[in-house]
Each structure stands twice: as C-alpha cells, then as structure tokens.
Image (cartoon, rainbow, N blue to C red; front, top):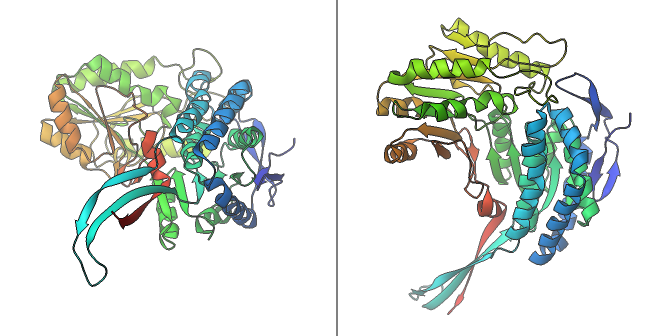
Length: 484
C-alpha cells in the first residue's frame, strides 16, 4: 500500500518521517497510509508559500475567482471518489458523507469565487484637520484598503475535514493569500486529495501546499515559522491556547474556532417537539462530534419531565451501527481513545450523582468505536460532564426555575460558541439571546445562516469567519490618507 504524499511548492514528496496508518472507525481496517512530515518539511512548505505570495497577491480578482470556480467544477466531477474516502476515514454515516461532508466543498469554493470580486476598498468621508506641528491643516481624504495578510497556516479538526479546510482555503485564496494546509492526523487523506485537485485546476506552485502527520514539533513549526503571517485553526481549546501562545510572541494574526458546550435553554412555552428534534441532533449528526451541538440542555421545571421523556424515547429509537447502511443514524466516534474519553465523562456523571436515562453502555459490536446515544439527567451545572466539551453523542439536562437563572446557568461556562433558545415568545427569546455570552445563538432552530459571522466568546475562540466576514478575517486593513 503506497502512502499519500506531501506537496511543497507544487512538488509531491514522501513524508520525511515515513508514514502511518489511517483506520476506519467503523471497521478498524486500514483505509490508507498518510505521510509523516518533518519540521524541515513544514518550514519548507511555509517558505514555498512565502515565495509564491508576491505574484499571487497581485493577481486580479477575476483570475482568483476563475481558479476557484475551476477547482469547484473539477472537484464536483470527482465527487464519487471523495464520498467513500471521506466516509471511511471519518466514520460518518453515508447520509452525512453524501449531503454534509463532500458537496459543501465546492459550494464554499463557489461562494468565495464570488467573494474574490467583492470590493476591497472602503471610502471614508473627508475630514477637516487643524494645522499642527506635524503638518499643515486642511481637508484630508482617506480610504481603507483590505490587503492580504500573507502566508496562512490552515490547520483543521477531524470531524469535517474537507468542508472545514475548504472554508479556510476559499476565503484565504480569494483575498490573495497563499496557504499551507495541515489536516487533522486522524483523517487527512481526503484533504490531501483535495489539494491534488486544486493544483490540477491550475493554481500556481506554492500557492497551496500541504503537509501532514502526528509529529507535534512539525505541527508547531507551521505556527512558529518566520514565513507564516497568520494561523487559522479549528480544533480543541487546549491546542488553540498553545497556538495562541506561540503565535502571540511573533504577533501573527489568529483565527481560532475552538471548543463549545452549547447551552440550549428550553422555556415552558416552547414547542417541545421542535426542541427534542433539535437536541436529538447531538446523537444523530456525526455522533455528536460537532462543536455547535446543544449538549447542555437547560430546561424549565414545568416541562422538565416531558422533555426528558421525549429525549429518552428519541435516543432509544436511533439505530447505532454500520455507517454505510441506509438506516443507520449513529455511527462510531473517530478513535478508540476518543471513545474511552467519552465513556469516562459518562462515568464521571454517575460518580457525581447524575442519572443515565438512556445509553451509558458500550454497544455490543465486534469492531468499531461506537458510543450509544446517552442522556444524563438529574445533573447540575457543576458536574464535569456538564462543564467540559465531550465531543460525542452525550446530552446533559439541567433544570431551572426562572429566566434569570436560565441565563446565569448558560453563561456559567468557559465556552461560548453556539447557544440556543426555544420559546414561542420570540420577543423574549431575542432578549435572552442578547444576554447570552455566546458568539452564535439559534432561536427555535438549529439551522444556520452561512453568511452570518461565525466564532466564539471566551475559550471558544478568537475572530470570525463565514460569508463576507471570512474575507475580512483573511485580510489586513490598510488606511491610506491624502490631501483632499
């Protein structure tokens, strides 16, 4: 079995540290071999991106848009190659792989092909300034030019590898930056294949580079390299904190989308069917491996028993099993180590006095890293399983009495990525949403508007992407002033 390769400056080469196996989370069979990049290869990739930046940043918006459109077309023509690969290395159900994983890549490229054509100059009103010791006074004109940042290290999480990477590559390239791509070590093969497609589409050598591996030093070199101007990272808060510490010493730009512990406030006037359906997505959508999941349910006591009963019934109705079977709803988590971690959180809830209303036991399969949809009730907001990000099919329910208590519980968290409010009184829901320390709030829905800015408060990250805000994230604001 041959190993995938690293791409530096348009040239493909083996990992200097060898290769390692990528394992299917459902079957525990080897999907393929991934390259183990070295520190030297990481630095070489950033240097290649820096060498390509000068010419790429001066290309016309039309050229960048055309290349992104061409990459989208070429990718779509090869989607049938990506679906089985993404499914196998992520363990996603076939439905998720076919609808939410693979097709979203070209959609994001096309969005940022349009984005490349958005204005980058913001005119300002002239200002009358007095004479000073510095310069004569008069009418001064000004404009803001949004300039590319430079070389961007794009480092992503394992849950939605190609989609997440496309959401970084697209706006970065549209703005005239060059990139070094580093997929998550658990499932990098489809991302490497994506870079192959983009280079085939005609992006100049060095504009898109890719490295890979489990070596921590090689990954850190993509942050500390003097050739890197910005780091865009999606993943755990712990890794994000380390990236921030390293990048901060060199004043690099940061876009960090980190952990979440989604608070979902359910008032006693809520549409409980809608609330139960939305909360059940923690189990049904990629086995809860989603940072925006409503994993911390805060429910008013008047409907507490009704909601718990509904969630218990929903959890029991979800088929856990082989993700390639059409009726499977809950597939495996990414690795055996992660399964053990999730099970540890469930046990900690038991130890702290919570009750497991559904799930809590490992499904009986010979192979695969499966976790049953689990519902923790009689919980408090101080329990470890309620406070920390589990990133698995586990929901914890905490009761409340009045609105202020609900907001207090929701905000009593280190995280603030995505929260939810369910109430038929949408005016109240709006006012509650504004009081939540959360970068995103959904009212009576888990659906997203992808043009809205996306990012978190507190330990959930720094910066915003999404829609045109993604273009802003990958640009520097340059003020240009002249006599009017």
